[in-house]
Amino acid sequence: MNTIVSSPDKRMQDIVEKVKHGERLTAGDGEFLYRSDDLLTIGQMANEANLRKNGTDVYFIENLSLYFTNVCEAHCAFCNFRKDEGEEGSYTLSGEQMIEYVDQHIHPGVREFHIVGGHNPHVPFQYYVDSLAALKKQYPHVTLKAYTAAEIDFFSRISGLSYGEVLQELRKAGLDTLTGGGAEILSDQYRQKMRVDKANVSEYLEVHRTAHQLGLRTHTTMLYGSIESHAQRIDHMVKIRELQDETNGFMVFIPLSMQPKSPKAGIRRRNSAFEDLKTIAISRLMLDNIQHIKAYFINIGTQLTQVALTMGASDVHGTLVRERISHAAGALTPSGITREDLIWLVKGAGRTPIERDTFYNKIKVYE
Image (tube, rainbow, N blue to C red):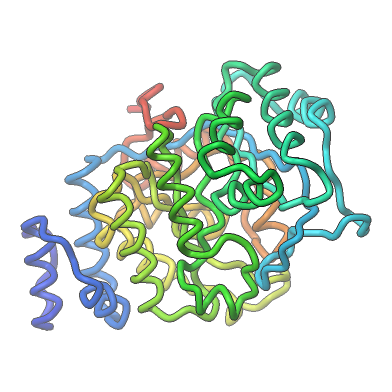
């Protein structure tokens, strides 16, 4: 790892040596990296770790975001997407209504539907099953990446079925993989303070464990930048790393930068570029057993996403037509992006754009 600039800090040099030799970082190492302002060294280590795993390949997918309902029983403090039943702006779409929406926005290159929404207790579990079945029947060639672990826990509660039974019913309807949302920060203390009145830490992890045991490969996230400590972020990563050691079912880790509740919010209400880049880099260094770290342009912007590709990220998500959850809050970024712009963004960082499917199989390499 002789491309890394020498740091005068002995603790940092010890971590550099660990990364150089492929040794696992401890929680204490991760916390030290968060305390350090040596972003250059942290980024260089993450870059080297990523190049060993993925070379210069950077992945993206043509996908479309779908939201069947924004009615939700939960009242998470950070969410500006949810509505109560009957509230102005609330909606619950039928399968036929969603197909009508998709027909207006889909094009032949779309390979994945990214499906999340509210925890709507006014419809039965069968509604969520039928929603997937309608999509799969109409668009059999499109992968259904649907529902968060928190939604699976919610479905279990309203149906009386176990996690495994819920997942099996959804798979019969066409489910191919779970989204990564609902993790927020995997700390019960955090979840109590932020009113995350949905799946707790153990339930979130158990849903993914069950999915992996059933043969599903899934995604996972971390929503950072509110009240959590750096130690809680690192503990979150360690919990994910430990489950990955057990199941090897996660394909990608997605650090999500918290958005303020209003697009008019000033810069002091947003995560700094420094913090976003450091979190992506530390994620790459701590999660040595997960293949990909995603730079999510919806939350950090396209230009910072490009820089993140030299600091550990190997995925820029996708075209994501009309993202709504971050934009219901204060996201100032585009709600979607074209394939051509993604390719330009990746090439501009000196990387090789790879169009992929949901499971990171290469569809096309853009030299």
